[in-house]
Length: 443
Image 1 (cartoon, rainbow, N blue to C red):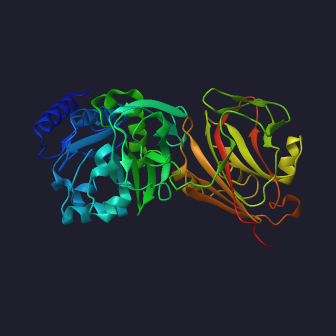
Image 2 (cartoon, helix red, strand yellow):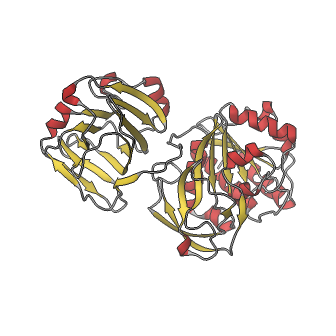
Image 3 (cartoon, rainbow, N blue to C red):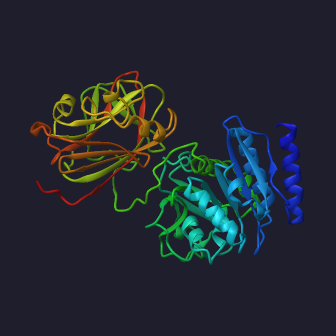
């Protein structure tokens, strides 16, 4: 750790213990060029974990290459100063912490693409500011005693949750909220209310979420009450992923997601069949990884007519795979090639044969694709939406392709879905294949 960062950490920690930081305290500038403001002013209850929270974020900055400034001075909220930051963290703030001019400056910052990270009591803040209420997603209502609980991880592609198992057992102070934000935000994780006592949200209890909000990005996690949270590796990784996404350093689909049902949920391949050579291996964490080929793992139980298909995928490097739609049932993988369409996964091929393309027919919008794409080793999310003969593709929530079929032999109106295993040297992984059926489209 550089001496300037050690000094900044020490100054901020001491000032927080005194209950005041008079101005931003900078840590060592990171190589990535991202800059983060941690704001921890309190006008209500004050958490004794604030020094640990500030120090944890600064340490994450040190190891991940971004600069962290920390303050409890609301005077930092001017339009000019906020433009310096890729994201602003509200770390267990409470009560009314900004005046009207500072609120306007922050609203402008978000509307011009700024990032927001809310931790724990950020939901116990600014109850009379509607913009903030929408940004944080839900306001605090109450909480039971600190106790262990099971967290159900609903999105395992977002960088805040991609490293977690499907369930996460940890101890914290578990907030109940005044409203359920599920219809407005993208829920990343929720509490299993049967695993602890005192939950009041009728069994649907979001605890971490993200959203695109009025031009900016907003991530919130309800964890972080205890000092111990900030020493917990899984919670620190959770925070880092949320910060990276809010700061634009990682991409994810943060649109609300409701009404989908699993075709592959990580535990069973019932209803799927392998066509051709090669196969997929299924790991304990619910990930399918291609091996051998060229073959196709296809969903044989039924075809689909009008639907939104979502799935998470990642490559190990410069690997090749794809998602096939609209093909007739067959144990010959070439039938899907000849009678359906492939949404390609391949970083380096020609425009009509690279990631996001309708293979051989239409390139993705490459500028949008490049901005939306996470690199090898990180998860991405496709939405493939078929309505009539129209096929659209979203990558991490950004629409990158819009194609209309005109070939009767490749009609999209009734077909099957499949995941390609391309070749022995191609390693592509898939998770959480889910579908939402849509109203049928007329001719």
